[in-house]
Image: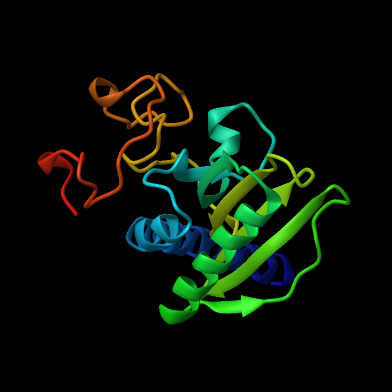
Amino acid sequence: MATSALMLGTLALGGCIGSQQQDNVEATAQQGQQMVNLLPGLVRAFGEESVSLLSETSCTSSPDPETASRNTRWTGAVGFSASSAQEGRGRAQAVREYAESTGWASEDRAAVHPSGERLYTATRGDLTLVLEQDGGEDEPGVSFTVTSPCLEKPDGHTMTRSELDSMYGSSDPLYPNDDRSKFTNGEPKPLPGSPDNSPSEGN
């Protein structure tokens, strides 16, 4: 009887884990759609009209697509070289004002590394927004990143990315469902509503 009870308990636990992983797939998809909706306004407040990265990314360091896709999150990012540290701080302040007017909650966090400066951090639900500046006063690199939490996924899960991602459509085995005909050789794609955005991309 004890062995049977143990087996039943193991099966039940396995079922719960599998159910949770499937729920995580849906949660990550919803977070991805939320990011696609929220990023254009934030990125424009940052002074840019495109993103370099907007996709589900692996929380592992594995190059194997199957392993990499078992623990993922969504990431949106863009970076640029500022003319000065003052410009970077000014852009961060513009993002802060926009973010706080649209439901983001600011947080105080220390700089990530000694040579850099964390300009702004905020959260909205499960999403985290971070602006960082790396370098000195002259031409520092400024990065803008929004991420969702890392979540475990079931066997067979594959990562997806937004068509706004500059590498959408490339022959990357991590993203097998991309439309390869839409690859633009890494060229930035205009955000929805941009003057040079094609009508087919919509809002």
